Image 1 (tube, rainbow, N blue to C red):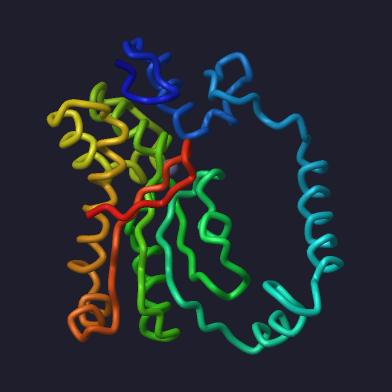
Image 2: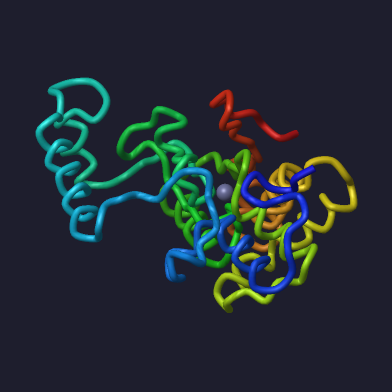
Length: 240
Ligand SMILES: [Zn+2]
């Protein structure tokens, strides 16, 4: 059984294994095109300038489409220029398919979002969430993992084959190794097991490594929950 949606069931050793691990998290872009492994969908055909133009055109549409009332209306945007009061925070994966604002139909100013590949409670995420809770009064943090997570797939590949990854990629994925090793020991789909265990570990990490978050939780001002986004059904379910 494949351990990852983008990895073959038996990965080759050496350079090809490294490429497979990199491909899991979409980090082969710097490699020669011929060295890139398949990632399920073809990469964008836009060149850098076209990509920038598309982004900026999106902002022009955003400006032009502001309704007088309803979500994202001009009055709300003007209020947000003076401050923010989000009702929840999300620690999510950087995956393009798991954007919290879209999944939860949230508007500008609704969610305080920290994202990285693997929804990891690293120093940047913890500091950001401490700000959200201590300074903005956010009462809820959701750690959100998702189906077919490429970071989890790479962590599983790393745990199985001890891949020699580039430094930043290796350092980013190291905190996922305990989840990957536990999932491999537990049997079943290793990537999905890694995603779920990783969410639980990072919920615990937020509450054990941050006195700010732990204090708010013990005072009843904060709840930290874990959740899983299913790409097939588009449903978000809490992880008990
Ligand atoms: Zn992911």
